[in-house]
Every structure is written in structure tokens, then in C-alpha cells.
Image (cartoon, rainbow over all chains, first blue to last red; front, side, top):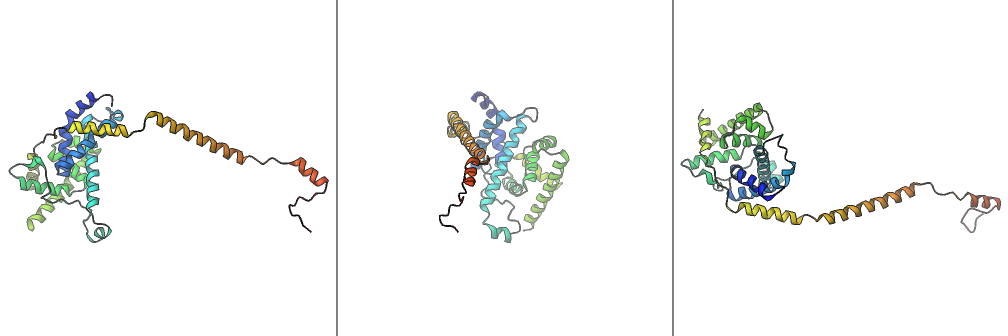
Length: 179
Length: 92
């Protein structure tokens, strides 16, 4: 990158966005902070390759953040898996799982804290693309066109992802209520 | 519809400020990475050495592939003098 002043401007303009997206994915402030650092180091390194005609700076930073978060979750999930036997014996061992107790999202300090945490726990267990679609459209409140642009998909594909995510969430909510 | 209502509660999640001193830590990481990177002089020296090794190897390969020089004069003399081309001292 050309200079630190320009990087500082980019950082100040996007720090909140990056940190909050990281929080929605990893549900833990310490990990979100680590990933935010990694994202901005990447932004600093890759900025000379950024092409403004292809995507806006915000979209580009969104993409870097999402990729970092998904990589982090993949690594965390791989660590949690006991090994070959668990993959064989447990049918859903590929599904990421997080305890309610370990959810440490500072933005969920509301009246419906427990309900929100349960919903976040279910979203955490969704496949990567469905998770991204739900986080961007329901938590970040981005329009579907922008979600499609960030994810590099058509609007229809995003709609379909959201539909499938909703079905999964509904099923899991029903299962948890039945218990 | 019930689910949509539940999903709408996600909008209650408050936006959180990034932790303080994060920028300083990021700059520190960038600086550490830059220190880890080899200086340009070293990169050039490594590239030149690699090129030299490559050229030496190519030269050796080209030379070994060339046909061996035939000692036709020596062969003619051996034939004319009816000398044995064998290295065995005792042959029948």
C-alpha cells in the first residue's frame, strides 16, 4: 500500500463492519478481534491488486472478511473433530457445533438474549453459504442484490440459499422446542 | 411467518465498536511481516546464483549429448599394424 495515512482512512471507514461481521460468524469477541487483525493485514497487502472497476471497496472488504471467517471456522471445526472414528460413527460430525455458554457476542445484550443466542447457535451450524446469506441479509440487513454481489452469485441463487437456510432453522427450532 | 418474525429479532443485535488499540496491533503485524521478508539484495543474489547453476547444468548436458570424437587416425594405424584392439593381455 502507498502510505499509512491512506490505510488508516480505509481502516477507520471499515473497522466496525469487519469486526461485527467477524463477531456474527465466530460468536466470540477474542477470535473476532484476531480475525479483524488478519483481515486488515490482508487488505494492506492486497490493496495494490484491488480493482475498483470490479467491485466497490466495501464489497471487496466484505469478501475478504467472509473468507477469513469461514477459514477460521473450518479450522476450528477440524480441531474439534476427534478423528476418523467420529467422522464414521457420528452422522452430522461435519456440522459445526457451539455451546450456548461459549457464545460471547457483545451485541446480543438485549431483552431476548437467550432467544437470540439460540438463533445464533442454529445459524452457526448452517453450511457456509447459507450462513453467509443469513448473516448478510438478516443481521447485516443488506439488500439481496448486494448480498448476491458480495457472494458472487445471482439474486435467485441467494434467494434459494435463504429459503434452504430458513427451512433448516425452522426444523432445528422445532426439534429444540420438542425436547 | 412465525420464523420470519424470529429472524427479524436478529436485527436487534447491536453494532459493536471495534476494540481500541486494534489499529496499533495491525500496524505491528504488518511491520513484523515486512521484517520477515528478505531484502531485495538477497533476492537478486539468490536469483543470480540459481541462474548460474542452471546455466552450468545446461552446459554440462549439452556437452555430454554431443557425439564422441572419433579417433579414426589411431584406428587406421591399429588396423594397418594388425594390432589387437583388445585389452586382454592373454587371448587366444
